[in-house]
Length: 158
Ligand code: RB5
Image (cartoon, rainbow, N blue to C red; front, side, top):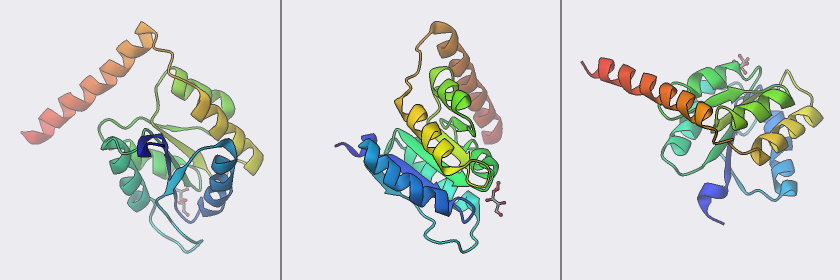
């Protein structure tokens, strides 16, 4: 299996427990994964873990990543600072499905203190199994996200 087909996964202390559960679940589903930490319930800063995982996804080392914190918000906000990253906070199955089908999300974020284990598993399963629709209207909208990124990058360089 190519590294790219592995799922990158990381969490802060608020998501650590769910990350451990999801790791076994990923294995059951037949996915390999790389765990970017954290490794306990000791308090850590979520941007550090979002950074490590988002950089690996952005660099093309992994096609998909999962980030978990207490609400999923901090991870989502941090990951979306990286050009090329489309992180989607999905605490329900419908949003998870749409985030792939319409938004071609490359990172899923979940709130470890928001969703129960079984729901989180369903969210992950649906997210990993759903494909981008490739419809021209959705491609066009993603292109516009990329245009916003490059426009802003140009402004920063000035
Ligand atoms: C940590 O207490 C908590 O703030 C974090 O896990 C996350 O919910 C932030 O968005």
